[in-house]
Amino acid sequence: MAPPIDNFIEAPARTHIRVGLAPAQNAVHSLLLLTKTKKLSGLSDWVINTAHQLSPEEREQHYRIMIAFYHAITPERRWSSFPVYLDYLRNADPEKLRDKMLNAYFRMDFHEASDRFTKENVLDSKENYITFLQERFGADYVDEELEGWAYEYALDPPAMQELITSHLQRYWDDFLAEEWERTLPTLKKAVKAFQLVDFSQMDSIEAAEYITGQPLASEWEDKCKNAESLYFAPSLHVGPYIGKFFEENLLGVIFGARLPDNASINAPELSQAEIYVRLNALADETRLQILRHVGEKGESCSTEIIESLGMSQSATSRHLTQLTAAGYLTTRRLDGAKCYKLNKERIANTLDTVKSFLLA
Image 1 (cartoon, rainbow, N blue to C red):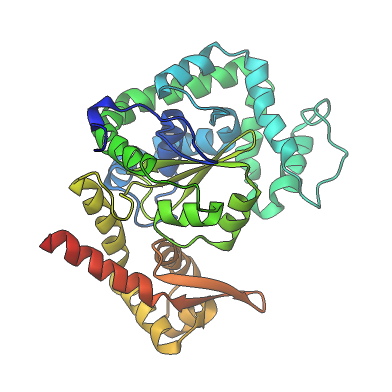
Image 2: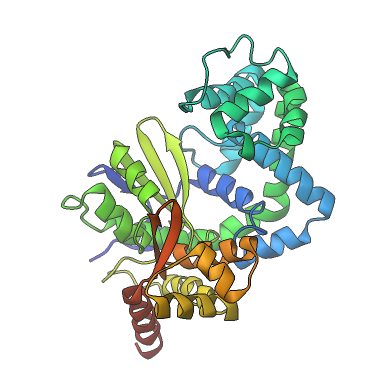
């Protein structure tokens, strides 16, 4: 008999695969999702509604802090709760907090990155700092105005620490604390259900696809293969997407909360949450047109989809991202272009899942 949910304890790892709550990482990821609502469709109602509550000025400030200081904010190990982690950030040495961010940048090993920047000279000027970031992220991915703003705080670690911790405290108190308590019982059920699964006969890719309930993109396959251990944390905010966090020799994966196949735990709210995420991807005329177009063509590249349906590149990318994350489309590279193919098995499985839930 399965242990009662009320006696929830995070079980010790039996293999290199582990499933748990990761409260601090989960909270940081939920706050990060508030900056993604214009780029990603299909996120949870909490994310969308909370983002809509913010004024334009609040949205801009939240974006600045979460993006510019993400590597200072994100936890490097797991904590018992987000408030405990927030206390740690508040009491940390300000320079060490700033250096944690810089060290994360230095660990990013890109071929075009030069060795001219060191921890001693990277903050000598705003130009040094921005060029340093451009070498590691690519010039197209660095907002010079944003990073110029962040640079001034990097020169003043106590001010940077106060800005980060006061902002996170406010968003926890005003938005996330109540939501975490509301979703916690459901997340515990997802964790307990997966803790009862024997992963000893699965490799990393098999376990990741089993837990997330979808095929992994090629970049995720590489990450899973290279990690010594994997830690999976369920979320009710992430929709069809997958988030990540890193610890030493460990890859953390934040996935849409769900039940494993043939789960011994009864949690209809988890089945309902997974169905909602899947049907949300289909509940849009444009996305249905995309699926129909790809199905009729057998395979279609993004440029063909844009031309055929008369959509903008940004709108097409947004829809394709959600359909791919939901598993309805698979992708491959062809002559440098991303091409899409209908995942008929995923569509059939979705219909079976809905039927099982409603007729159980």
